[in-house]
Image (tube, rainbow over all chains, first blue to last red; front, side, top):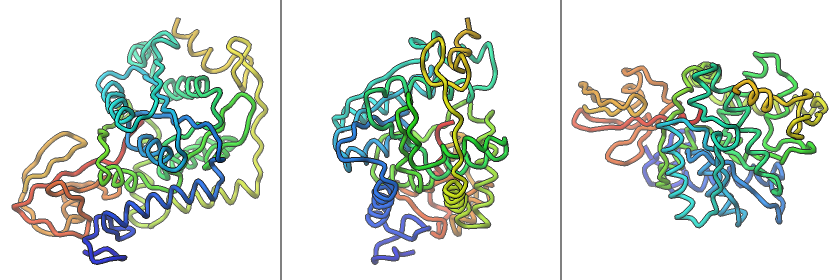
Length: 287
Length: 64
């Protein structure tokens, strides 16, 4: 099968493109998202939330290419056999591309690795997500934007999960750029319109040395079930994930959903929806 | 044909000649979840593979 733009062999089916045209198509899509949603201003100081996985590594590479100076910020949750491997990949990548890397760990910052926490409690994704968000925001202070590797699949899953759980107030997070809230560094998602498969193909074609490995705790997550439903549906209805995102963006504009006002945690002074934030509550519960 | 399935870190052998999409169906894998590589080259679901080929099925899902 040939590329729809030239006589070379296609390496991707939808769209039908050869290696060079696919790389151009992918980079243009990311660049267009940055422009269309005004994700970056010329002099923005940008930190990229990195895991060493394919998505955040792609964002790191492309923001360095499009925007110039960026810093990689990684959180080591302490997941043996997973995060230690992906962080090694990230260190090598940053060294090769001359990018500053800052790593902060659950162990140093909240007292325990995720592996150890899970001996006391279940719900790995909820614990991990709470601490990761807290630490990323804390260590991104002083930057204008945190860029994350959220792709189209992640975002469509998030929309569906929030609807299923009735968390409509969280739907505004499913945007290429989050709103400005005092105490939070704004998040941007340059891969918002790139499917997980497109990102993986780009990484493979660019020969980035990242492992395609999954978090060992993922099987237990609600997200995983939603991912399977969406991927099965996409086989029958092309573009269903893209439709979810476009409709969500349209609805958000019309509804203008207001986010609850934030208070500030009485313990750590970070933004919180309750007197003591979820992070401080969790830290106390592990003591 | 030798088929390495990265997600379960296993190589399986089976008789197969035909389209990649039918190969994926035969091992019950959703094409949206994977990339298929033959001789270090990315191939599409519409490409043909021969029984003498050796292919890798790479998971595109990461994170958690």
